[in-house]
Structure formats: C-alpha cells, structure tokens
Amino acid sequence: MTVGREMQPLDMEKLEAWCKDRLPGFAGPLSAEKFPHGQSNPTYRLKTPNADYVLRRKPPGQLLKSAHAVEREYRVMAALGPTDVPVPKTHALCEDESVIGSVFFVMGFVPGRHFEDPRLPEVDNACRAAIYDDINRVLAALHRVDVEAVGLGDFGRPGNYFARQVKRWTEQYRASETETLADMDALIDWLPGATPPDDGRVAIVHGDYRIDNMIFAPNAPRIDALIDWELSTLGHPLADLAHQCMQWRLPVGPVGRGLGNVDRPALGIPTEEDYLARYAARAGMTSLDDWPFALAFAFFRFAAILQGVKKRALDGNASNPEFGLALAEMIPLLAREGAAIAGAGKAG
Figure 1 (tube, rainbow, N blue to C red):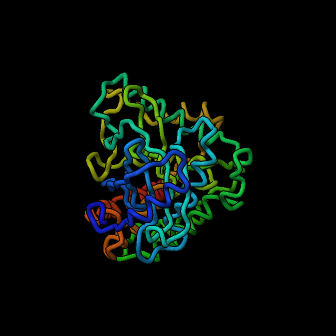
Figure 2 (cartoon, rainbow, N blue to C red):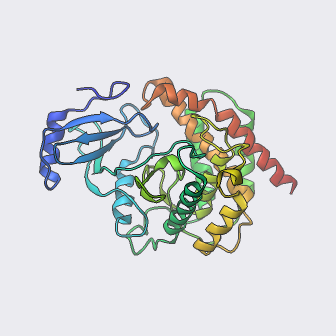
Figure 3 (cartoon, rainbow, N blue to C red):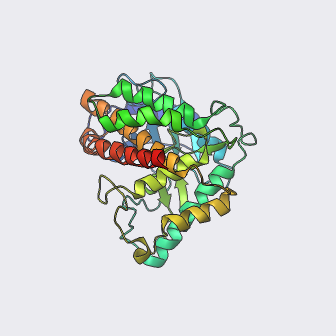
C-alpha cells in the first residue's frame, strides 16, 4: 500500500500486527493517511474504529548523520509527558526497520486547530493576543523543565551550545550544498568568532518552535500539543526564542509564514519587545545581551536546514518535494538577513 503525495510505502499487515502487540486496546482494521505538511520525517494519521493514532517515521534513502532522529523525538516527548509542556501521548517506538522499512514511533492523535499563518486570520484580536500569550507561556515552561528530573540530563552534549551548533550546521550545510552563496559563506566565517561565552544556561530546546508546530484546543486559545521534536536537544533557551522571532521577520504567505511588515499591534499580536519582556519574566532570564548573535545564528541555522530539505528534494527523498523546493527559495533571503545582522553586530 502507498500513502501520500509521493510513494511512501507502509506494510499495513505488518504494521497492524505490530500495533496489536504493543498498543493497549488497539483493534483493527487499520488504515493510514499521510499528512501533507512536514518536510523531514513523514507523518501519518492511523485510523481504527475505536481510536486514531499518529505514526512518525524516518524517510527512505541515504540520510545525513544525526538527521531525522525519530528516536530522540520519542524520548523527549515521553519525558515531557508529566510536565507542564503539552505533548502528545507516546505509545511505542519501533527500531526494527523490517516492519515498515524504517524506524518509527506511534503517538496519540490530538484533535484541535492547526495554524500555518502566524497572522491568524481565522480569529479575532482578543483570541490572537491570547494565543500568542500561550505560545510565550509554553516556551518559558519548556525552558524551566528540570532536565535531570525528567531523565534528560544526557540529551545533549556539555559545553557551549552555540559553538557546537555553529559547527554542526556548518558541516550539515556543506554536506548538502548545491551552490555557492556569499552570504552563507560570510556567516560561516563570522559566527565562530562572534559566539558568546558559555553562560551556563542549559534547557530543553525544541529546535523548531513556531506556530505551525503546535496544535491548539478546538475552542480555546490554548496549546494542547507541541509537535515535531526532531531538532530538540539540550541547549541555550535563546536559540528557541530567536528561531521564533526570526520567523516573524520572514515574508507573509504559505512559504515564508512570517510577519514581515505586518502591523502587529493592529492585529492584537505583541511587538517583539513586549514578547521578549514577557518571556524573560516567565523564564527568569535577566539579560538578552546576546540577542543579535542569537538572531543571526537563527537565520544561518534555518538556511542550513532548508538546504538539507532542498538536497533531499533534488535527490527524491523529501516528504513533499514540491513544497521543499519552494521553501528552498528562501535560503538566499535567510542568508542575506543573517549576514545583515552579523554585519550590524560587527559594527556594534
């Protein structure tokens, strides 16, 4: 059986047998439908007469080292289940590739609203303000989790997070590079020397904290599930904050999904200054001195991520090749914006 917009085979007979052995109360018949969004790990809605589930798998083909780590996604969501951070219920992880051809895990299906446009045209100003406040609240809650208490003390490497990430994403970018971009080369040259000293802050970072990776309650401005944890690790909380605010500088529309040039107060959306202040108060962060570096890094990192998406699309391994190539058109913009911030940082 094939499911989705491109060929992503699922052996339904083997999968149903596996689910029966590991999911309490599971009863077929089982059917599957691939979600259209998601550029990294293919994700499916599994349907049965009594309950729905979600399956997330590694994609087929040759993969970059450490990429598509569904095992890590499963581990962090399972650890966060008892905390104030809303995550789907995890059911089981399968590392036996003979079942469907790759490692996968099954989690609970969370009904609710999924927004892709951060302008939130579907709701009024009061609801927008409340939604953004809850996004802020959940991010601060995530960064306040005691990593040792939830068993994630070894979820990331020790030492300067930003220095490690600059090295990692430089390597990932070079491994998937398809053309020369002067702005990316400039960022790669600038970031190592501009990396701030390690201030000792360690938190669980989501890695892709943005509104389209959240499921909201059907009738309330509340996040019921934070999803897509593939890039999560232990790191500096400013990285998540900068990633979100970086997106707000991107163009509006289905590709950029940003708030660039949008009058936020007119829509009930907080300004960046207000949002940062609210987060800092909730997270107990007294200094945002490294904010320009964090933003430049966010643009660089996202450009490197999309370069990987582009390479997979060109190689035929992307979850949604057409949209992956559309996203890849933003790589020069991201590199240019990051380099501009880096230039300002040098001048300052």
